[in-house]
Structures are given as C-alpha cells and as structure tokens.
Image (cartoon, rainbow, N blue to C red):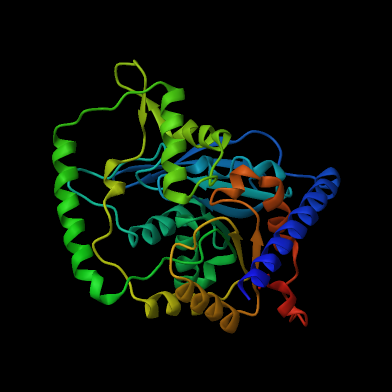
Length: 349
C-alpha cells in the first residue's frame, strides 16, 4: 500500500513537472508580461515607514505582494517578469523586514499587527479592492485578512502555506513563558548591541545554510538567497561590511498561539477565489491531520478554491518561477462569475 502511494506521488510529480515546463515555454513565448524595472516607494507609518517595490502599470489591476518570515519584498523578483501585463504589483517589506522601519524600543512584533499595517497600506494606496499574493507567512497574513475584510480582497494567492498553524492547548502556557524569557534576552542584546559584520558573500552563505536548515535541504537556491539579500543586508555604520537588515525582535516566538478551531474558522470565512500552491518537497508546517482539516474547510466553504501541487522546496516561486507563474496567470485570468461544473478537477488530491 505504501509503495503504491509513493509510486503514484512520483508519477504525478514527474508528469506535472513535464507538463508545466512545456506550458511555461509555450505561454511565455506568446504572453506579454509586466515589463520595466521596479520603483521604490515609501508608505508612512506613525513610527516610520513601510518600504516597497512597485512594478507595472500604475493604473493596472492592483496586486499586493507579501513575503515570508525574515524575507522581504524581493521575494517576488523572479516571478514578476513572468506575470501577465495589466497589473500594478506592490511588494512590501513588512515591518521590521528589509528596508522598512523597525518598531520603537520596548515593543515586540505580533501577528495581529500585520492586519492593521495591511489596512494602512491599502488606505495609503487608495486601493478599495486588491489581489493578495503571499508566500509563506505572507500567505497566512493574506488568508486571515481576506477572512476579516472580504470586501477588500478580489483574489487570494497563497504560496506554500495553507494557514497559520495551531498548537495543542496544553502547550500554550509553556510557549508564552518561553516568549517572555526570550524577549528579555533579546532586550539585553539590543541594549548592548554588537553588530555582526560580514562580507556580502559570507552573509549570503550563512543565509543559505540557515534557510535550508529551517525549511529543508533544497528549499532555496544560492541565486534566490542573493536576490533576497539585496534587501536583507545593509552596510554597517562604519562601512566595513554588511549586516542583517531584519529586526532581531522578529526572532522572538509569539506569546499567544491559536487552537485548530480558530484556524478553521478563519479559513471558512474566505469568500474570494483562492489559489493555494503547495511545494511537494516542503514541510506542511503542521501535522497532516491539521493540514487535511483546513483543506477540507476550504473545499466545503469556497466554490472558487483551487489547490495545486508543484515540484520544489519552500521557495519554489524564487527557485523555479517558470513553473509557478503559469499557474498564477491562469488563476488570475479565470472567469469565476459562473459556477464551475468541473470544480473537482481543480484539485491535485
């Protein structure tokens, strides 16, 4: 039984890989894509600013790009040139990441903060409605925001994260304790700062090893790391080398977690067309049981939910954008105004 299941998975991955490679070559040769270079923009916040990269036609359909934990706005750099024209894509450096401002002293980052800053960004851009495209943590933020403000989200694209994971209730108190203790340790480090300094090559090497340790071997390529480090590194004050741009406090684990029922409730409230792209070689970042429950919630509550499995690791959108872009373009161009009689065919299950 296990052998049969494994063989089925291997055959599906091989056939899917071949199909997408051929499709991407054909489509990209005839498709007009977002062109030109990005422009840097700043969005004011009470304590500083959000930095962002903007691509495409300023009057095009808006897409808000969100990145994963400790990544930055460069996460979509490899994907952008393969996306169809006619869109305005604004990729954010979320608070404390990339070139965005760090929180004031004495404050910690919370997941719930993301929804407020997202609302501020959309108000500043004067976007009444947007497509959200998020990788990893960015996909989780986009998912939950879509549940809270369905009137503002036209479509949702989540890359390699189904949702924020839950934690068994019996572990919550200990997790909160660890968060407080880690906060105190980090605070001491920030009061007596020792800025780590590296060459660009050394820093990229460290980031490459760390990402592959956290997300699994093969999760990100060296080229993709260098792309992220274009905003993930800044010059040291004395100009002797580079150091990390991300706020050290981002590494503090959250004090308060959620249970499965909360995750499922948010998932049930997403109304817009929703595409989930799952990397076949990446972790699910939760148990198989929790993952399958959330997937079932999407399928039962959203007639326009689409699920795609693509070969690759956690950063597949950076490593192999030629496989990911055709799926996203097809989703963005699909007419969801009529019920889909072949809805079941939308799932790679």
